[in-house]
Length: 412
Image 1 (tube, rainbow, N blue to C red):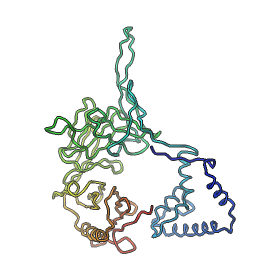
Image 2 (cartoon, rainbow, N blue to C red):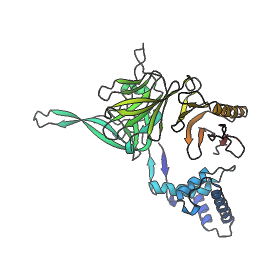
Image 3 (cartoon, rainbow, N blue to C red):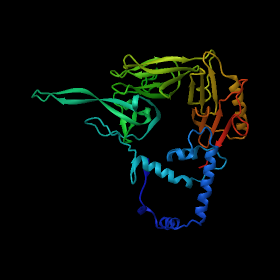
Image 4 (cartoon, rainbow, N blue to C red):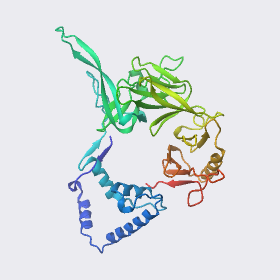
C-alpha cells in the first residue's frame, strides 16, 4: 500500500514545533536568510544557462520551475530542502490538503455473488493504449423476468473505466490455472479494476498436461467503447484471446522479445529484429499486426545477451534502436544491417565504462526528443547517449567533456 500524507502542524513532534518556531522567528540578517538569498542567486544563474529555453523565468509556472531545477545538469546536486515547497505545492494542487491517497489490495469491481478479489502480486506492469484512456470490461448480470416462476435471464453489461495511468498490470501467471487471468487497471480513484472479459491466458505447454507458455511481454489495447484486448507474446508467437471462447488466437508465429508503446502506437519486437505494429481490426473485434521493420541479416541481440528494456522506432530516418538490461544498445536500418558508426562509438564508450566498473544492469531505455539522445536508466546511474552526427556521419560529441555518452550518478 502506497500513501501520500499531508497533515497539519498538530501532528508535529515537540522538537519539530520548536524548530519551526525558530525558523519563523528568523530575521532578515540570519544565516538561513543569507543562504536562501545565495540559493536564489544561483537559481537565477542556472536558469540563464538552461538549454533551449522558450520561456523567460518569470513566465514559468511553479511546476515548470520545479521541473527545471530537477533537470539542470550540474556537477553538484542541489540541496533538496531548497525545493520542498515546490513538492508540497504540487501535492496540494493535485490531491488537496490533509488527504491520504492509498492503493488498496482489493479489486473495487468484484463479480456478483463472489467475494472481493485480493491483488497481492502482479507479474509486471504493461503498456495500456486506448482513446482518452478509457477502457471497458464486460460482466454478466442476472435480470428478473416477468414470468412468475422467478426465472432469471442473463445478459452481458459493458462498463467503462477511465485509467489514472497509461499502464495496466499483468496478473501472476501462477494463477492462470485458477481462472485468474484478467489484467488490472488503476481507475481515476486509484483503485484496481479487474478487466473481466479481457483474457490473457497463454496456450498450454506442449507435451505437458499442465502449465502455460510463459508470457514475456503484454499490453492492453481497446477502442474505448466496447472492445478491450490483452495482446501478449511468448517464445512461440504473438497472441490474444478470443472474446467469446477465450481460446488463444495466434497473430504472428515467431518469438516475441518485447512490446512497447510509443506515442499513439503499439509495437511488438520480434526475433530478427523485426518490428510489428499492433492495432485493432475487423471493426475493433480482433487484433492485427503489420510488419514495419526488418533487417537483411538476423541478429540475436535480446534473447541471447539480455532482457529487452526499451526501444525507439525512428520513422523519419527509418531506423530502430533497441536496448537490453546488460547496458547494450543497438541501432539498425530498415532492410539493412546494424549501424556500424553508432556501434563503434558506443562500444568504445562501453569498454571504458566496464574498465572503471561504472556500468550496471538497466531497467529502462527511452528516447529524449528534446535533446536527441537516448536515456539508459539503472539503479544507481543514468547514462545519456547523444544521437547527433557530424557531416561525415560520425556521432559527434555533445557533452562538455568531449564524449558522446556520459554516466550520471544518482545522489540519494
